[in-house]
Length: 545
Image: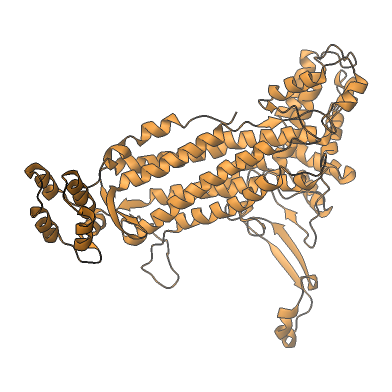
C-alpha cells in the first residue's frame, strides 16, 4: 500500500499543454486535494512560471527583519513549471531526460499496473478449472487490450481521483478497471476477478519490472551505446597520435591518445554487457508467497505453474521463492552495474578534463556562449564536469536503492514502496551524465602541437627501453646506470644518444636504440587502438532479458 502524498503550502496551478481545459481543472483539483503526485508524466512542459507572492505587510521599517521571517508568513500561489520544480530533472534538465518519463513516472507506474491487471484477468479466462471466468470472445479481449494500449493521461487522472477516496494506489487501479468495464455485457459479469487472489505487490513488482525493462531497453542502453561508440571513434581516429603517459602525475612511457580512449570504450562495453545480462525477475504468489488464497478458492489449479506462465508471458523471469514482495536482489545487481558504468565514466571525464587542462584538447567554441562572468577568455570543460557531477548524484541514489531494497522486515515492510518511486531519479541523472559527456566529446579538437611539445621535453622516458635492451645483452647494472643518468636530472636527446653510443651491445641493437624517440616509443598502442571496434562489438549489443 502507498499512502497518498500531500503537497502542502502551495496552491499549484497545472498548465499541461496537451490536457484539455476540463482535465486541467481535474489536475488542479487533484493537487489541491493533496493526493496527486508531481511525478505524473507530461509530454510537454510549460516554460513559464507565474508566481504571485502575497507577503504579510512588510513596511519599510520591517525590511531589516526579513531574515527572521518564516515560511509560514508567506502565502504563495505558484504555477508548477520548469522554474518551480523541486527536482532539476523535472525543470532545468527536462528536455534531456524526458524520454524516461513514459516509463519511470507516476503515469508509467499506473499504466503498467493497468496492463498487469488486465493481463491477469485474461489469463484467468484461459484456465479451464475456473469456469466462473469463461474464455472471452475476441471482441471482449480486444476491448480489454485497448483499455491497456490506449491508456492515457485522462485515464491516469481518473485513477488518481479514485485514489483520493481509497488512499490506496493499487486499489484505485482495480476500481478504475471495474468502472471502465462495467458497461461491457461480457466483462461486467466477471468484474470481481480483477485483482483476483492478488496482493498489491503482485501487481507492483511486475509493473516495476516492466518499467525498468522498457526504460533500459529504449533509453538507457541506447544512450550507453552512443557514448561507447563516440569514445570508440575517438580511439580509432587518434590511434597513431603519440602522447606522453603520466603515472603519479609524472612523465612515463609514451602511449597514443587513441589507445587511452580505447581503454574506456572497452571498460564501458563490459559494464554495458553486464547490465544487459541482468535477469529481471517477477513474482505472483499472493500475500506471503504461498498461494494461500488461490488454493482455498481453487485447490485443483496448479497455481505455481500458472504464476510462472503468467510472469514469463510478460517477458520477465519467474522467481518462485518470495515473501509478499519480490526480494529485489536483481534490482540491486542492475543498479550496481549502472553505478560501475558511471564510475568508469567519471574516470573518463576526469582524464579528458586533465587533457584539456594540459592543452592536449581544444574545445570548439559556440557563438554567444560565456565561460566566466568575469574572465572573458575562459572556455571551461563544463560538459565533462556536468557529466561527473550527475554520475555522482545518480550513484548516490542508486547506491541507496541497491543496499536498501533487498532488505525487508519479515514477510514485508513498506520501506521499499517510497524508495522504488525514486528509480527514475538515478536513471535520469545517469542519462543526463551520458548526454553531457557526448556533448563534451563533440566539442573536442586534438591539439597535436601540445602533445608533440610534451614528448619533446621528456627524453628521460627512453631510460626504460634502454635498460631493458642492456639486460638482454648482459650489460651489468643496467637499471642503476640509467637511474644515475636520468633520475632528477635534465635529460636531452643529446645526453641519451651519448649514453647509447657508449654501450657495449651489438651494432643493430645500438642502431635501433639510436633511432628511438619519445614519439615512436609507443609499443603496441596503435594496434590496440585500431582494434577497439572489434573488441567492443563482441561485448555489446544485447538488451536486458
